[in-house]
Amino acid sequence: MHVRVAVTVAWFLARQAVAQGIGNTDTHPQLTTEKCTKAGGCVRQNTSIVLDASFHPLRQVDGTSSCGGYDGALNRELCPDHETCAKNCVFDGADYEGNGVLADGNILTLNMYGERDGKLATLTPRVYLLDVNEDDYEILHLKNQEISFDVDVSKLICGMNGAMYLAEMNQTGARSALNPAGAKYGTGYCDAQCPSLPFINGVANIDSRGACCNEMDLWEANSLASAFTAHACSQPGVYECKGDQCGTLGVCDKSGCAYNNWKMGNTTYYGPRTPPPGSSDNGNLTRFTVDTTRPFTVTTQFLTQGNPADITKGILNEVRRLYVQDGVVIENAPVIARNSM
Image (cartoon, rainbow, N blue to C red; front, top):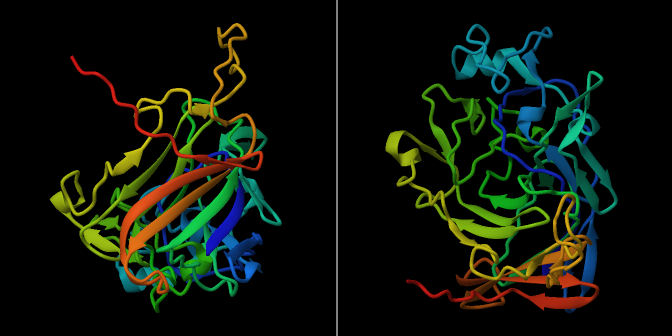
């Protein structure tokens, strides 16, 4: 079985998240995905997306005063402790188009830049996939499975990063009495970098802890380079780290185990077949195997040892990358050995 979604990637960057009650309604853009099997073919899923909580205004329940949290420090008058903050503060719905998020059928476009107050602004949206009920995050069980998505990175130049990754967030967004908003408003973020967020799992982060969890970077790329990286943590679920636990030698592998074709010695595998603007190539084009001037499909397979009939069991022993362009399946480039002096 594989899960498939088309994505036009423009930018994807972590921002801090906050969490509390519910103000006005958040209308989630619909994004069609598919679940496919050899026996049953592909079945359309009426899924949707939600912007991370940091893009939802957090305001005083009976007014328009900000509770702070990501554009600045928490408002200590409104949020002196967990219970009072939950009582005083609510989320409002996010402005998806204004934050660069456009969904049309099975195509998702995330724009790095947009207009705010008549001026060009950096947007950097981050979105999560919701299940068909729009109550919880869609959980992907990928052992003995694969996940595929289409990308167009032709406009992503050097210095930009389009990313699609998995994080071991709580399925409900840590919905609770102190955090009724939950996944519907994009709460509960964590990753292997253990970010220190204003709220962790829906409660105020009074002790400045980090939110750690396992992370699988399926896709970090622009038109010139790409990588996929596994970041493992020694603690399961969302782990609240403190001190050295949050550091480089802490509970998570921050550097991760990465596969970058160019870094591993193959400089003709991935890139644009036409010279980028300002290039001195003079028409001598490098014939890259994967041409980033045109859309292509990215497929990641998760192979395990054990019983392939049970997707929840077995030991993961290989992550395999494939590309598809012009109907041709392209194997991942092997590592090229280099002589050392």
